[in-house]
Length: 487
Image (cartoon, rainbow, N blue to C red):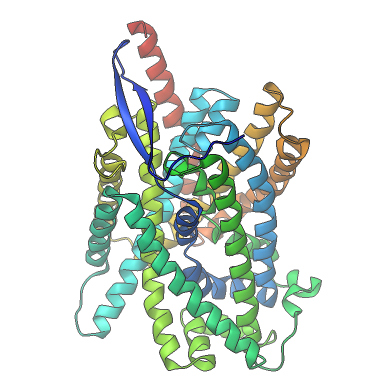
């Protein structure tokens, strides 16, 4: 039986101090987040309107055309099966760290810390990509208004605002994300409703979900691009320590987030195909990928809707950046608590209950990446956004395969009668095969995900084992140091 915690529950963690055997530092976590707050944060990380307005046209043009919306349904099913093992493990491993905690529980601390550093690479990459896209979008808008401000300056402003929000109470972040998310979903659903009401371009049909449409064009490319739209949904487990009732809240938030994202993408994608017609949609998407959805909103709802979509695209990017910042800060905090970063970084703010030091570290890391990008003259879209979003897709699938294997291994070593065979073994096994299939095609098509360069693809591909190795070696060194000092 699960005992519900009061709304303002305070959880206390004891964090061993390196080099001390008797003293301890106390990290106070204020458990305030309910299911709704967590759902807002993880769906905001997926940036649903950005996916529909930015990635959907690319997926249609480069993927499987009118059949592309069905790829979102397939991805949702695959990730739904993955979530069975994920949430089952979440009920067993009652500590922060999410993916890396699960890998550690099934293997050892060294493999777990390698996974933690791989997670840092994943979420830093996708956050950097989204920040760059936001900077360019704001620079374009200000330029049209006669105020030429470089993209990197806008990005720096957003990094500062998000750093401030991340430093403070997480409820402030969740409220901001909730407002933005409601606006995103609201305007998109209004557009969908008007497309349905007007019967699309030449009557409604379900051609997008036929085998012919599904297998047309490049379905493998479509699958990879669709999968990228779900990055962030798995972050529910990262907020375990701040959830009011983690035993119930985390599984609920995971399944609700995935269902909302999957249905939203599939329905919106189908409606936009219907708005232009299955025979015309590929040509339209290829001709004007940036403006296709804005034009759709203008045609079916009105000129004001096109303007609202453009504005909410900016807030969607901001919300995604904020959500990834919160996830990263909590990963950094957990790594510090495991001694593989200075323990001061794992501190919790006495007033806000936030991982404030980890938040500052995350902000500084992005500023450093931005400075390097500006110095080398990296293009914010064709290089930063393209390369780093492709990298994050590649690494998140690696981690999901590792987690699915870890679930099976953990329950093989720790037999349980409380959990079903389906949740402990069958679902994770299916997930390994399905996600392994996706990973295989990502590896073979990584050049496409990072802009077409074989050299860049190899360099990006090697970052995964490099970061995993950094985490693994740091864990080994810390263990050896503790042995020498008698801890």
